[in-house]
Length: 95
Length: 496
Image (cartoon, rainbow over all chains, first blue to last red; front, side):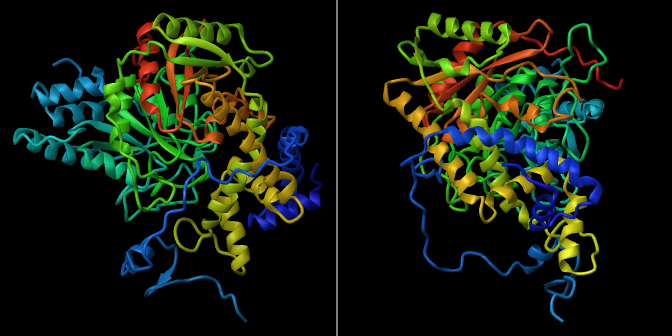
């Protein structure tokens, strides 16, 4: 499979990365080189094989459903590029 | 005492214990070395004041007979580990002046055990790279030079290139690193140092900037096997804050260094003899076999039939996980923000200017393989092939193999700009021998095997059973004992 320039633009938008028109051809070439490289996986017989989702078999650990942390608003906001009181500030998202 | 930066970590520990040296002297000697070695670009952020205050505490502890396991030993921290109150960059512009209000569990473990922290080490951006050339803070230069080619700037490997170069150049006694596809072992092999990628779950990932969470694992780079064992003992351990961290006791790895390897069965996988393997790498591998045989190990040929699919599988799974993990860099909660006409425009501009080209490429590949219509064809298929890669190792271990011996890398280090400029895949091939280990969650160690004809180090890799790092330390020590001793060049890079 290979991607065309419309697909490159769509992937960039899904990735929330702005791209210039001048970059599209180069990105298309690079993405297609990687896709060609992984194409070899199509020859592997994967019938009846379960997908591996955890490197080692382990039970997901559970803990009691109680508050273990909190009250650290100032810490959480300390690195925000824009904040007001105890809020993150973003461009307006509702009209 | 002569220059204390020439001591190994174990020697420095013993010198401090016997009060032949103070922690402040030891730390100051490393701070001086770092300041004279800025030409190598190993550190993104130096923290000399912090290190000296930690060293003063250590001297007080030693004086009252209250020394901890790493008391007063100065280390470097890969700048992927969050350090409380110290700017943490992940080698990226997008984190800007991000200054964590918390400490990663692994670096907190090192501090708990008394280490001093000299600063934050350079790396490929978000640990994506094999040469340290993708760092937003400029490439790291290896202290090693190619024979007869003093002008070539040799790469220290990646992504933990600041860690490997700083340890090789004696700027710290040891360093933390991380390994997603080979990022501890490949830079160790390139710089003649020892790098350990522990079993997945052995070290907590909490507070380490995430790249591909099912593959990422923390580990040490040090100048010898014993030093790496000492560091790993402090780094490892259960952490309730990482659900994949394993609740199992941490053995005394140092005790495994020097233990007999007689009767150990070592698998040599025939699939690693790849097409076009250099004669030099093949000869190194043969020597490794001979050294282990001389030490009493039994060598058996094994087959890991899905080896050739590991790297393509990695280049689906790692970017997929990365595209998800790196979604958090949105210009809202931390790091850089570019203004936009609306929130989407703000996200897109922030990420376009904040991420470098390799990171943008991997996010886009990851987004593509997870997108509707392609998820099964790429991502689910890759996860199934990953099962087969792991099964290969399970079968070998079930047949009685204790560890697997391979070369660490397909070549020696190269010079800046020599690889990957035209085709990103050329750079990816660096990890062809290391990436299987991450796929299967196994422990692996890279240990020096000697010098190539071009004067640069070569490394061997040992792969172990899950949570059997001790066997790897014993075997790596046997190789270290038998291999020719290699000396890092005189400090040609020093400014005075």
